[in-house]
Image (cartoon, rainbow, N blue to C red; front, side, top):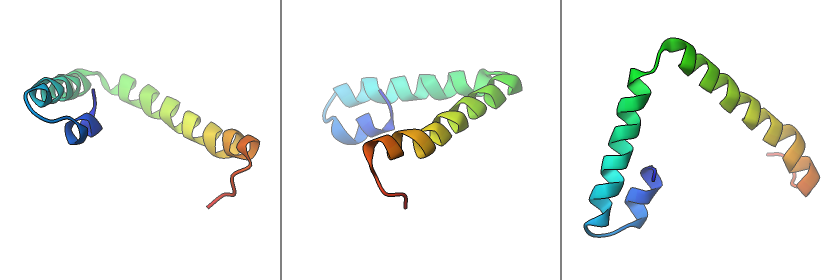
Length: 63
């Protein structure tokens, strides 16, 4: 689960979600710099693809 899961869920299951988020953050911090660079490049290329291709195919107006 992610941060949005903490907002949606109630009760004891929220503890499990928080633990999952914490473990992902610990893993993220332990990664080498090259993994951060590659991850940022993949994220940026996906955002650019969505902005240029997917929105045009769906007919959405930019902005």
